[in-house]
Image 1 (cartoon, rainbow, N blue to C red):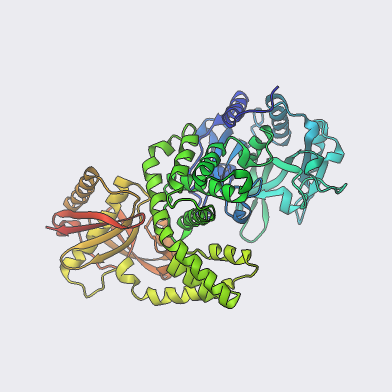
Image 2 (cartoon, rainbow, N blue to C red):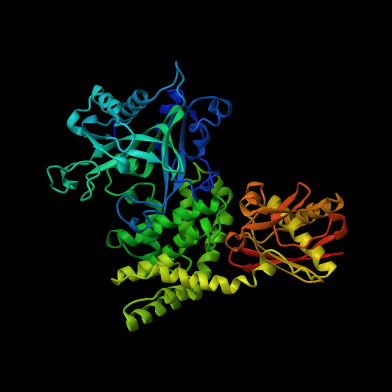
Amino acid sequence: MPLTRTSQEIRNIFLDFFKKKGHQVVPSSSLVPVDKSVLLTSAGMQQFIPYLSGKKDPLKDFGSRHLTSIQKCFRTIDLDQVGDDTHNTFFEMLGNWSIGQDPQKGYFKEGAIALALEFFEKELGWDKNNFYITVFKGAENISPDHESLEIWQKNGIPRERIKEFGLKDNFWIAGNTGPCGPCSEIHYDRGEKYGCGNKNCGPNCPYCQRFVEIWNLVFMEYEKKEDGSYLKLPQKNVDTGVGFERLVALLQKKDSVFETDLFLEVINKIEEISQKKYQAEKRNFRIIADHVRGAVFLIADKVLPSNIGTGYILRRVLRRAMRYGKILDLPKDFLIPLGEEIIKKYEKNYPQLRVKQSEIITVIQKEQEKFSQTLEKGLKEFSKLTALNKKISGAEAFNLYQSYGFPFEFTEELAQEKGFKIDKKAFIKAATAHQEISRAGAEAKFGGIGHEADKQAIKFHTATHLLHRALREVLGEHVQQMGSDINSQRLRFDFSHPAKMTAEEIKKVEEIVNQKIKEDLKVVKELKSYQQAIDSGALAFFKEKYPVQVTVYSIGNFSKEICAGPHVDSTLELGNFKIIKEASSGAGVRRIKAILE
């Protein structure tokens, strides 16, 4: 049976195998998870957490307790290692689940191990003599996983190729709390030429990459609580994950994930644009290819560049890609053709990439235009600082961030390349001081117009809430308020959106706002804790600016936002709403001016 398969063939083989084994195929969830305890989806199991914890029934929602998926994932914990053979920010995770043991049809450790071996041996043609296995040796009040050790031996893996490790390597949990359990990992032995020469070399060796972890079988039987204790779950679950990029590299006999057909077209495109060879510039090529792929998928899932949260991650990878593009002397717009290559490569499996191509490319283009204007100046300033001082203070790092758009980690990486560190605490102190200075003017921009405002300004302020909600209905939930300016003649409202609104979209927004005005919706004011407000569904996009107690204004069941006020008592007081102008207000930000007639 041939070992060289295309990435598309491998996808199909995996899903077809588990379908034949009675698993329901579940589409990938968004990179922006419903679970707000994490910024981005980093594992295949995250969309299934309510089912794994026993709070929801998979039979009701999926028609099966046995599920399989290929999940989009994004991790930044190893960002500085991207450029080696195996690390990526965006990656895909193949997985299968057995949620809650059914006495007749469920499976746990024995079933999961048997399925994994059958897939590798019969579907992919691998020899299990190349496998090394790791199991949990026990820790704290959690027993060692002797059962898995015995099952592997029963399935033909000799004891000397089964290694035991502790919590760090063989106990899995997605975050700090939640469903978790001991795991058993399959490592593929690539051979002695990849080894460190140590006779005791084996899985998790810190000195070489001979043994590649390819499948993690997690046996979820615990839930970790906030106090650090582990309680038994009401059910037992199987949660597995195969790193798709690593699997493809092994099957295509490549030393690096970047040399597989997953990256072939984008690497070729970088060669074409740069007139340089991949073999001579491997790390630079790899970082650019990885980051543009990650950016495309983030934008497709409604993430826009910003200085907080997921938007900061997107901005960071795009700007890092631009910095390495500068090293290769790539033209200023080089990210656009690379983004188009990524869309072309993945559109079969993720059709929304083609649907959102214009939006994706627009966001990349605007961020590239914005940063390219300051990148060169910022690099010159960085060189000047290091030449004078041989170090960069926290305040100077903050100035590079504020004046030239250099994320702290960006400056930190530049500094490390020159052999010195930056005081991060001093950077945070400088950033905090700046926040305090700007906080004084925040209310007018983000939450109120002042309690001495005239009646007409109060009407305009209330109208911004209706406008905000209408924009989210017409354009999508990615729309966020980015600022507002109100006087007694008109309102000005800035919001996140990557493209110019069409005439039809503007008309639809106007119609929604005017319909809500005609409905004579009551405006209700409530005082709540910030957390209570969020839990009630109130919108809040400027979290660092809110006190512990906040005011929530609800307009019927249509709009609910944290806001300082004041507002009218009912929408009928507003009159007729009319948009008079829609224009750009910066990269990824649009501005509407409107009046009340």
